[in-house]
Length: 115
Image 1 (cartoon, rainbow, N blue to C red):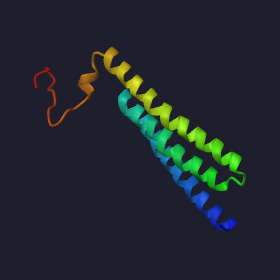
Image 2 (cartoon, rainbow, N blue to C red):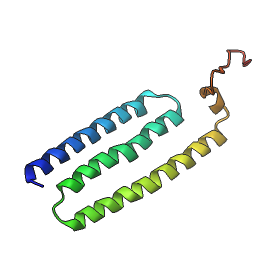
Image 3 (cartoon, helix red, strand yellow):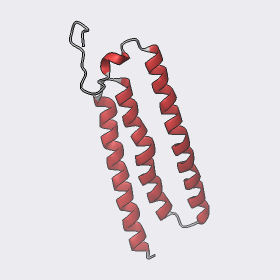
Image 4 (cartoon, helix red, strand yellow):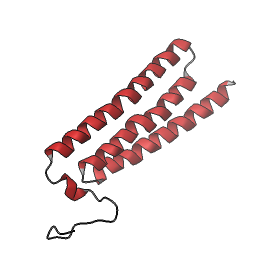
């Protein structure tokens, strides 16, 4: 693969990764409920890291860097969903008003608490 094609593909992947991270960061600061914020943060860890580390993998010349970046991506993909799941379970168990923020199906609560 020529150097210009590798450079172009890695620049495209980096730009897509930065766009995903920017939109997700906007969601982290925009949403009010903690589970929505955690969903946006998990997108940064998985999709944004995939594109950015993929760009770095394409730009790397030595195979040693490729394997190290692949290991970092693997650890992120294993650890981030587990951490997000544990934090969301902790939030649901400790926040008594968590069910008020969630809408399941078409059911919504009125102001007086009656469905």
